Image 1: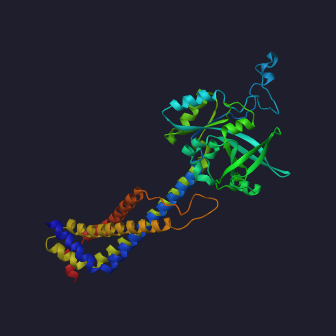
Image 2 (image 1 turned 90 degrees about the vertical axis):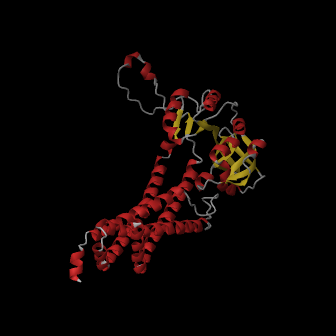
Image 3 (image 1 turned 30 degrees about the vertical axis):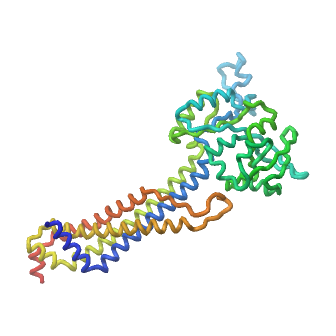
Amino acid sequence: MKKILLINISKALLLARWRQTLVAAIGVTFSITMFITLLSFMNGLNDLLDGLILNRTPHIKLYNDIKPNANQPIMNADKYKGKHHFIQSIKSDANKQAIYNSMAIMTSLKKDPRVLGYSQKLTAQVFFNNGTTDITGVLNGITAEDEIKLFHFNDYIVGGNASDLEKENNTIVLGKSLAEKLLVNVGDVIQLSTSKGDRFQLKVVGFFQSGLKDVDMVQSFSSIHTVQKILTKPNNYITEIDVKLKDINLSIPTAKEYAQLYETDAEDIQTANAQFETGSTIRSIISYAVGITLLIVAGFGIYNILNMMIFEKMDSIAILKATGFSGKDVKNIFMYIAISIGLFGGIAGLLFGFILSSIIDQIPFVTAALPTIKTFPINYSIIFYIIGISFSLITTYFAGWFPARKASRIDPVVIIRGK
């Protein structure tokens, strides 16, 4: 009963100074609105950039790197054993770039419960013949079905159909910039040659656009069997196995394990993209810092308004205490006021934040660098809304606690005597 009475007194004080109350609530609402909008947009942007990089990057890449031969002839000479060897112009060893025993490795990967899937790849340096001019390019032999399933290959196809690589023989998907340079359309036949001088004709079945013009100027894709035929290599000849794990956080230890187990080089995604992950983390920190700063500023506004209210209502506080209300009761009255401002302002901020985020989500965002993106990216994670309302209540609680504590210590005798 007493609690209800205190709430009613808080309500009366709020309505008596409704303009100041409204200003405080608007401050909280604006802060929460911008907090939600900023976090939704910045995390949507992070998700977009992560998708552009991480979706096309394997969690673990197995390959054979070209390295200088560690075993030089001088090391085998008995005369120089135990000596320091100073050797210049060390040449690479004769090891092939092909992954040894690749079929057994892929069979082992298929049985590994940590592995979501894998895709084999073969890369070849080629020259695209454009009249009397040869354009240097890279031809990637892939299994289109695995690339589509694991690495979102279809999201970067802006013309034609990537699945036709497996349905038809001697087909190719060209980088969009390369296709424009060659002046070809889907269905046209192009000619390319290898470093050995062999020439082949391939039918264009699609265009690939990564968003990086320099990459799209040289990049092209064909089925792995077509590239093996172009290089006159056997069916088990591959130069790279791209592995996708069920948990990306296992990439570092698993890559080290695979390097020892399969005797290949293994590069994990976190090492390959450390700089990119740092950028995403910094953007998230900045967005949280700005949002929390807005809430703290709103908290100072509530603090000032409650201080003014206490100053103006000292006689009312004195009467309350003189009629039997304790200092704790007076403190609770002003805490109810602060929490009410934080709660209603926070709920309104969440609503307006969602509306503003939805509006941004509908704004067209068309750029040649991001062919699959049509509108500005927004992340509607419920976590942002939980953090927003929590900070709203916490900020207004502390903004109201100090003035409420001050009000609870007012001596009614001093106030009444002064009146």
